[in-house]
Amino acid sequence: MPAQIISGIETAKSIREELAIEIADLKTRHGLVPGLVTILVGEDPASQSYVAAKNKTAHALGIHSEQVTLPAETSEAELLAIVGEYNANSAIHGILVQLPLPRHIDEAKVLFAIAPQKDVDGFHPVNVGKMMLGQQCYLPCTPHGILELLQRSGVETSGAEVVVVGRSNIVGKPIANLMLQKRAGGNATVTVCHTRTKDMDFHTRRADILIVAAGVPKMIKGNQVKPGAVVIDVGVNRIGQAENGKAVLAGDVDFQDVVDKVSAITPVPGGVGPMTITMLMKNTVQAARQAAGMI
Ligand code: NAP
Image (cartoon, rainbow, N blue to C red; front, top):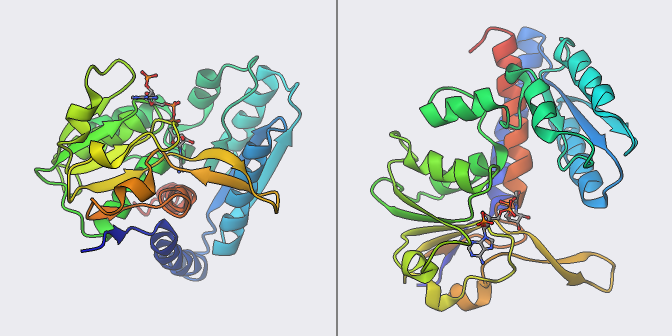
């Protein structure tokens, strides 16, 4: 049977439709407009395009969105002061500081300064801790998107051998933790691989669900996956430029080499990517509900 292509574009579209209805309802019945601010420091082109996409999506869904664009020379103190202002701004429920920040700014300090109840990226230690404890919190957007993709594609995680390649704070560690949680969408047996893993193939070949977030283009080949596995490719790697100037992207999985062996797989682009922004919107709506005492 051909592999199911798990489309992040389609899943994200369904979630956005649900969110648009919820946001319209919050507005008309409760006079509540979810508000998001994105703060960008510097002129990194990738960051600029991510922030623009976030604001465009927020706007399309009826979320009030503000964008603060600061020069690369902005001091840490100036940035912290701006975060403080938005912490106190009742029209703003979610604050997103686009990473990476220029080197002279301590990222951890800035993320810690965001009020945990407005931390819609889910990077504040309070939210990370709550996630670990299985408590209500903002889940980081990319792992949250992977959970939704698996659940909405009908992939059973309970009792599954899940292997995660990568242990970053934004993808690998949180998705491993979420797969482990004692609740629906979790209950998996989880292994995490990284650059010091002795025999990575041994692990990837026994994965019922293989989640790859390494940042190495096409590193996972067909002979490294178990027949019938579900493969989630988080990687987004620019491997060239098309004639129209657009970046040519590849995942961390060699799609062509793997697709005939597996039962389901996410493409790149169009897999996990579209889910990340959508989950940011979902978290912003959750933040607005929470601020209004509705959760
Ligand atoms: P990261 O911070 O660079 O972490 C990469 C992880 O992969 C590290 O833990 C590293 O191990 C491990 N790794 C690298 N090469 C490996 C190898 N050959 N064998 C085994 N493990 C290896 O990356 P990230 O931020 O998690 O991002 C990973 C990928 O996902 C990137 O392509 C990124 O662009 C993409 N991404 C996509 C989205 C989205 O929305 N679709 C969101 C976030 C990230 P060590 O810890 O030992 O160094």
